[in-house]
Length: 417
Ligand SMILES: Nc1ncnc2c1ncn2[C@@H]1O[C@H](COP(=O)(O)OP(=O)(O)OP(=O)(O)O)[C@@H](O)[C@H]1O
Ligand SMILES: [Mg+2]
Image 1 (cartoon, rainbow, N blue to C red):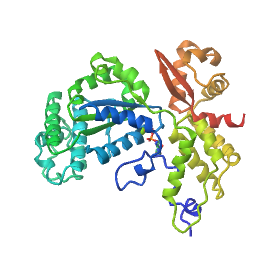
Image 2: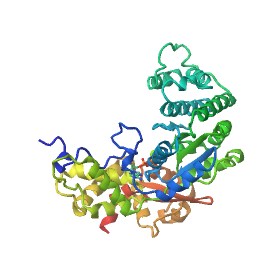
Image 3: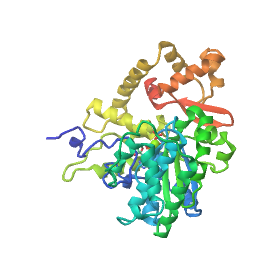
Image 4: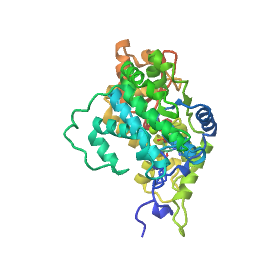
């Protein structure tokens, strides 16, 4: 008796899951499902293997595969080149202090070394005790949760947890430098620190540039290699905002939209990985549908996968779901979402944007077409962006370009035209 619609197609679970691929051995979205990106991979490895310390921004539009790509790079560095890595990444919310960022980096280094060193070695490493007390004193509660991963849980009081002390960035630098040097004498080639979703910092670019400047020395520790996942705007707005920050970050490596043959391979890998032995496999969707959604979502893999999953779950078709079956449903589904988040006036703006002659547009290009004033245009764009009806595509000089999102295109029945 099938437990879900996927079982009746001969697969264990949805092949359209939207989580990033992960290097941990227990992951249900394992890194072995990774496809393509070989040129970008060579570029990153060349930089990392060619220098003792790196700060590499992996830039790309939302959902293009930045996090999965960084996971893939970490996987190779660990398996083929003796680097210390961990599957988790550091989050950097926009209101982070230099102390909190310092702690995130230390925590990540400790977790990576835990994976790379023989058991018992980490605790004896020079700098480890200092790292531990910096982390403990800064954010006791978070640290206690993660401590269980490597067995330090006992003996920490909770009285200080609401008053995290403020450390000077030099203290983080010293602990990082000592541990990194000590690890290299133990045979660790280098340590990777993965900072993710740095677009969170764009909210206040100046403030964020100061934050990066405050931890600048930690970014320069020999033996540490920083991989930063971000949108392209992070480099233009945050990194470029401060000369001392700009000077330590080279131009980003861009993750371009995946081409259709690779998307096809991506799904074929997932189908094969999820197949239930002894059962016949029925492809959930036709390649025509995948190709069309890939075109509509402009390289946003997460958006495309989510649309495929939504269409399959809601239509409950057991034969491969076709373009003609899926599109009317998806148009209705996304239109409903748009009407819940946008006012009637904003929906009118959206449909006017859909009739605009070019795919990519700047605010100034469409203002007249939308029949709104200079003062109104950025407000309308903000609202459309918040409703995921438009997305940022590129920045050129001071110009920000936008396009309709896949969701909006589907909602507006772009396909049927
Ligand atoms: N090279 C790849 N091979 C196989 N699957 C991939 C690849 N790149 C991305 N994916 C899949 O596409 C989806 C989106 O990928 P990912 O989360 O890495 O994108 P992202 O750019 O980090 O997204 P966001 O901007 O939301 O952080 C995930 O389901 C992931 O598993
Ligand atoms: Mg990501």
